[in-house]
Amino acid sequence: MPILSDRSTEQDWIEPDEVPRRIVAYGYAFEHLDKIELEFHCHVKSQIMMVQSGALSCEVEGGFWIVPPHSAIWIPGGARHTVYASGVLKGYNAFIDPAASPAALRSCRAIAITPLLRELLARTAALPLFYETTDAITRMQDVLLDELAAAAVENLHLPMPRDMRVRKIVDRMIEVPSEQAPMTVWASQAGLSTRTLSRLILRETGMSFSRWRQQLCVMLAIKWLATGMTIQQVANALGYESVPSFVTMFRNVLGAPPGRYMAERYSKTGPIEN
Image (cartoon, rainbow, N blue to C red; front, side):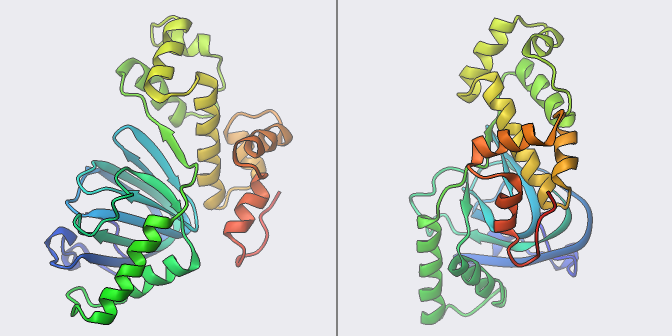
């Protein structure tokens, strides 16, 4: 079952694939969310999950995405995916008929949400579930689809290896990201040579081992910062010996230090602690 508002119950839910409308949208708000974990599932309709506050993480076969505030993840119809979330979480969740889905959005991606796109999702979510398809609603949804097709893609994606030997290492690195062991140690734990591990992860992800781990650290940092952790806490959780070294790594990947990067997303909620 996709994410619902905390004011809803499972009995209220109608599977969006069963609603004969080209776009079905819901708002969600979890003020005191402990944890959400949805196992691998899929929908006939494409899905856009937009985050207004908090953060989602989502795995689609072959990739892992973090969705911080003012971003969204696009999941094409039929793509198997999982969803993880915790903390204060608010946003919109929309399902779009494959026949109406923009042709440019054939693959999963994280996209930036403009104020116009956010307002269009909000207005669509405010409609009755079985709304009357008027000319005004059709025009509004046409603009929404155009905005989705034109949305900027964000670097919030981590390719995931399919080789089970490498995946075992990756799962451990995600579970305990503070373990900053060299590649020789990780390779030994998986019964691989360093050369074999390097070759496998490059083949499966298109990245070197060090580049993949750096991208993992950045994505986990964004997720934790979005849930209220300080930069000091994030640096410690990722195993960095100092805050400056973590900040330098983050800036090199995303072009801005973590404080400024998150402040731009939380411009209405006050400064981020450095």
